[in-house]
Length: 376
Image (cartoon, rainbow, N blue to C red; front, top):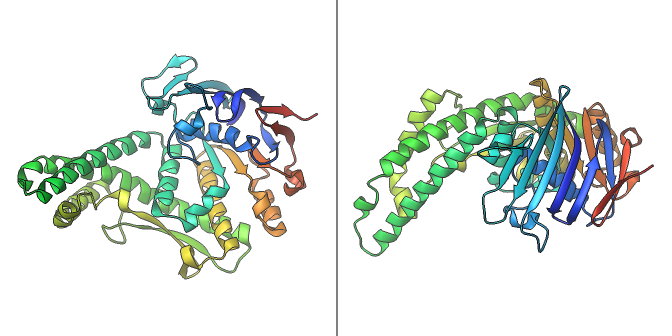
């Protein structure tokens, strides 16, 4: 799989730009703030329908424009697929496949499989659990696009259930009838258990499959004596198995156990949205104990593990390294270059070409404010 062409209109800093790409290595060179990451972000949006930099779509649209457009021609197994996305802040986005409208934008997921490593990924190690949950869920969808629907259904249930609990919480504060406000809570419990069990089972399967790839990738990048490993932390307990029929009643039982606490706080306290991916280096948690260099290596290993896992599934994703080499010492640079040199398509961004190891200096594109040109 590779991106043959990407076109942007009113996306971030670009009024209009078109870039033709080839398989193999492409290096985007430009000073900071010129728009290298904007181009990468657009490809990431096609792959995940989300930005790795911002939480809402509004910043993606160029200032003064009503909407932004991404067009992406993707070649997979000799066939080309055209994906078009129109991003309209405050409204539902629109999508097309081969110029035919689709009912929901998430129907394009799977057209482009991509693994992106960016400086923001340090949050996978040092940040809140939400970053690690997103990492797992994005990889779930990349492997099996049907999980996009599972995520959407689960998020809808959590939103509705939280609204119900919040209403009951406020009613109780003013002395109202709490029981009447919670009359439909049992129905939402069933929905949460059903969709939550499906999502949790997928995450458990994924974490187990990812583990060996993570250990191997960290050892290759860091050349360290400490071994990296991952686990899955759930309020349902340890040693969970990805059995959907067993997880559903377990979630229901946990909801009943936490019912009083949920009513008192007005929020859902049980479910995959409260879980975490645990990262361990040696015998200690990576968060709080890993050095800066170890944290970088762990974050990079998480992305490389995702890349290797997709390849082992028969998927050849596009690999993107966004301003990565400037953050690594010479040893880590060379080891990383050796690991990714055989990628079907590798996109690298940098401010200084010398930061990129010689083995990865393929086609070069110069990025200036609002334009991208291929170097001779």
